[in-house]
Image (cartoon, rainbow, N blue to C red; front, side, top):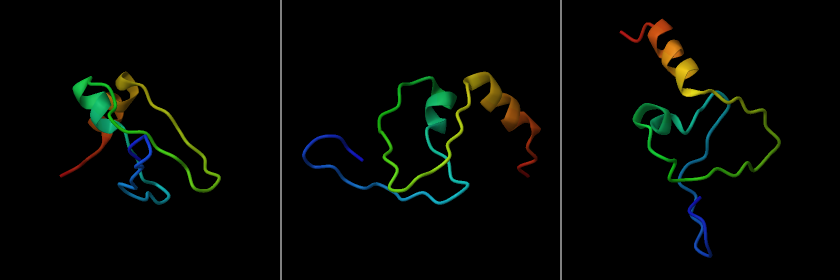
Length: 60
């Protein structure tokens, strides 16, 4: 959502989806916020844990 009177839905995320990873990669501040439409369980990850997880994944 873009805050203000003109809030806009940018994307609806499903179970297993993630957001905010670009902030961990670039070090820049987040530029958007998220609002849950239903009850949900969220996990957070700091930059070091995120990088460690990337190194453990076989992408190719």
